[in-house]
Image (cartoon, rainbow, N blue to C red; front, side):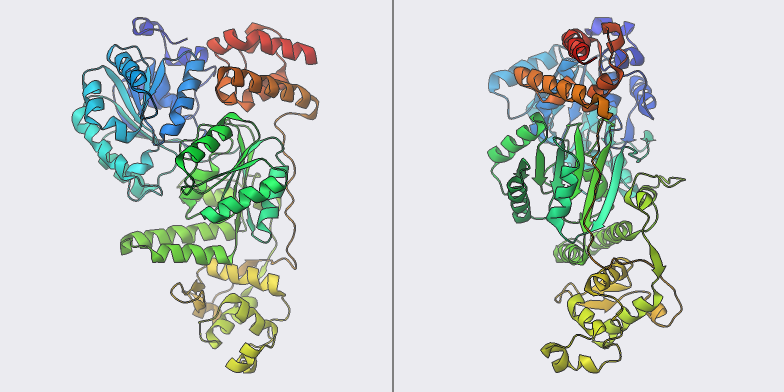
Length: 604
């Protein structure tokens, strides 16, 4: 359990890790970050979601005198984070507008009298005059700024209120500051360091690989059915489905419920009470699916999300990585599926160009969208392409993405591309894909005859491919930049950079072999335990659910799925043996050990 400050000189980082949090070894850069903070220094920390960022400030919070102040973007999630810490015997609290006045006064008194180890606070509340005065009159161990990419205008989720955190540098110059995030490219990192006074501080980059996540990206053909196939491969497991619009979110959630899947919508168009209710259900119940816009997810501390799906293409690789990273935070196997099509590309381009952002920002967003399109169409290892974008190259193919598991067939697509590009050029660079495919396949219509397109040299030159195949080929050419979408018009295609080289035969193209028909998505069911251990695992899940309901906390506050899987697989038979299971510290062993051992004994 957490000791009062007077006993901190008997504790070490490893003893805190083992006895309080139940883990045997630090991972990656954790130990280095903790040593830096214990020495009184600040740092920028880039670690993947699920990589253990929170331990980087939770461990030193228990070893340094005073209270560690954690800046978190969403007050709705703070209480669950606090409950998880309390379950491990840590003195933690949050300070936000959801508390009654007497509760706020109680927390403020605890801060002032050194009765807390960690205090969670939103940036808006932290920077109030009253809160700053409280902290200036209290002993502060450190400041941890979570989701620090929100500081940067170049980040994918910029939040103006985070900018004001630069005041911490002036008001608390001698207190260590940790800026933590899972996604930050070079421009974002530079701005974080500049805004938070970290130019001379250490930078820890723990790598971006999430080997437990299986990445899948597929052409959208029957979007709802494709998502349903993924969900059915994860029965009774929690997941998130991201949609681009509020209407699409409502529609998808309603359709899933009609298919017998318990699903909840979440978007900014719902009332605050409804969003809070749905979020609480998702966090506290097993097996629910949250259908959401990107308004949902940041700071979600639910470790047992087993899948994340995108019905619509996200805006960038950063957004994709951040959103898929919410799966498998416990380190157990998880899966992602992103669907995309030519219409998604057009919509994203329209959204990008229709805003009022300065041209410099638009250029950056165009490059980010182009990088995402490249990830969609890549025929080599998906993970290698993803990690290369973040400057974290992977030497060998991962073996755990769709292109590794089912390598796509490629062919010399130079002639096919020449036909497509020629059709675009000869029709005047103003028509959409459907019209161009009719021209290539020699399909007559009133429109084609009226325009004289049945007299073009390219009319009927592409009968070797059907509509589905031509759609796939056009999509690849757009992703490669050889064709661009006329955003201001009606989605007509124009020749892009490099198209002339292909038309003149100066450049050859290897393209993904387009399927003759739209194939049904097949995703094998994933399980966390071997077949012989499934009954015990489900019995432990039921016990966890009942215990969590009695205590009024989410199930993962009791134990993570990965811990239950280890219990089902290893079947410890004593309290000492329980201590060897990852995720079981002293407090949880004392609280739940006997019950868990009894359940295991019934199944051995």
